[in-house]
Length: 215
Image 1 (spheres, one colour):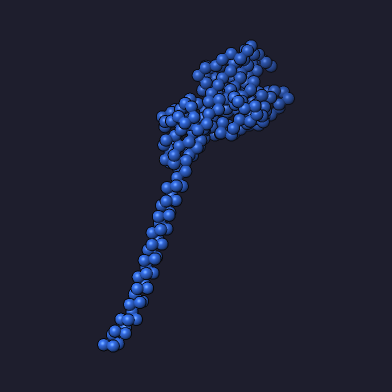
Image 2 (spheres, rainbow, N blue to C red; image 1 turned 180 degrees about the vertical axis):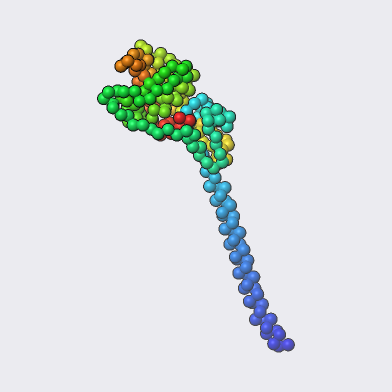
């Protein structure tokens, strides 16, 4: 009997110690799991991108999926939309001769050309590519006279932020882009784009303008 009591006396501390170890391990695992779950919810970052066109209104206004869809933009959970039809940006060549580099039609089916000299300035001074004046002239719903045979086109570039799931999209920044096109005769053709720049910016446009997805 004394042997049995001695055995119990030695076993009880061991059992208590083992139970304490199991409880500590379980608590640590639960805490770790809770931390991971908490971090996952916080790490659901916002999705930010930019477009050229008439979506939303002023800064803070809502932008619907339907509006984005009309611009060819689809927002998927967790993924920043990519440019659907990327174009290789050509460098301005033969600037001295001011030759035509690009041609397209504006929203009224009027042919617009972009020559090397204006394009060099658009690239280097205003931080835009040929895609921006092209989209501005194609998506602008109206144009105003700028003197002589030149016309002014305007279109808003909007930076948009959605939640991780691609919902609750809002305008967070707006910049108006102006493109001036001169249709006077020049070198057996027309002169074309005179300039393209961001209103209120004397030099480079913000990067989000040239990175607008629907260009």
